[in-house]
Amino acid sequence: YCAGCGGWHAAEEGDLWAESSLLGLKVTYLARMDGHIYDVTEWAGCQRVAISPDSHRVPYHLSFGARTAAPAGRQRSSPSTSRASSSSPRSAASGSTHQGTPVTATPG
Image 1 (spheres, helix red, strand yellow):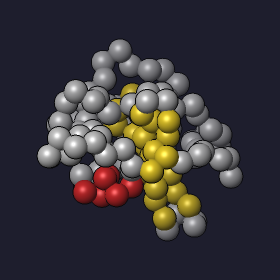
Image 2 (cartoon, helix red, strand yellow):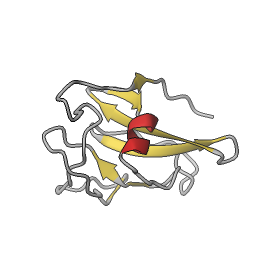
Image 3 (spheres, rainbow, N blue to C red):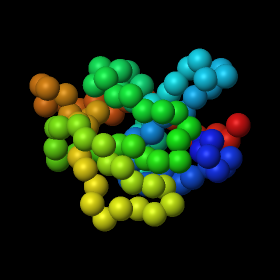
Image 4 (cartoon, helix red, strand yellow):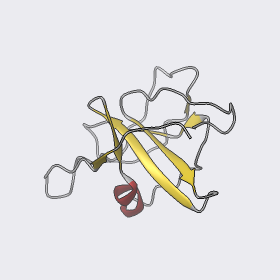
């Protein structure tokens, strides 16, 4: 949900964003990977990712080939041609795969 527009935006592959609930007391981090939306709140906490929830900007973009975190800085309305990489929740230090919990986005 975008608080700036008062509506929903489609997520693109690799997008990482935060949504709030319970009047802003609970923040959930979500990522679109392999065409699915995953709850990556636990991973984001371990990575110390700090994203303002319900923002118009997509502050991070996941690049599955890199392991360094950097802000993407692109707007939802106009995708950037230059996207920075971020540490992937699918890449653990041991090389094992971690995808988080699939979720279904519902307006509300």
